[in-house]
Amino acid sequence: MALDCDQESEGSVIALTILDKSIAPSGRILTAVRDPFTNASHANTISVPTARIPASLLEPLIEVAENAEVQESTSLLDGQSVRSGHGRGGDPLIFAVNALLGTKLGVWNALESDRLSYSAELVAIAHGRVPLGADESGGFENIRMINILVTLESGATEFPEKTTSYSHILWTPVETFLKTVVSRDPATIGLDPFEYCVHGLCIATSFAYLKSRFGRPEV
Image (tube, rainbow, N blue to C red; front, top):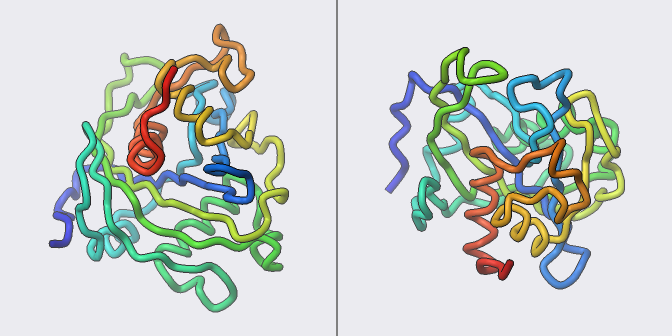
């Protein structure tokens, strides 16, 4: 059964769970810290990469997805896997992933030259409320967020250490990522807990998917 897409009043956001499976045993995930100058409402928040997209782009992505499992506020999905590459930019899933990778993570050239290649699959959707400003005084917005699993086939070394959007871009072992989310302790990945924090719908959807795949970590 396809998902109900009638959520016109919500903002539309994609989050990426980017995995490099070349590192055993379960791989590593790309983790990013939101830059305080370009993202004041979520400054210094440890996250996975996200971007707003038009609702008209979100709809075809979720229309064909099937509910697989519900974990707390996140619905895990059974989506179709699509590979990147020349001639695939017209696929809505590849288009959305490429746009985020290029604009937020600065890897347009690697995508264009096929130095970075991947498979993508829609794995989760969640609904939530996010603040419109640096604190709750600015009100909240309802959002609908989908999480796309991006499994790298090549190009893990193409990602920079930081971009305008993210002050830190880190490769984190999946087990360490899961422990960091459970403990809410940035020190687990080498960041100062007095300066950085771990929360948000994006990281919750990545956690829900990875927990279902690898199990809940011991902290």
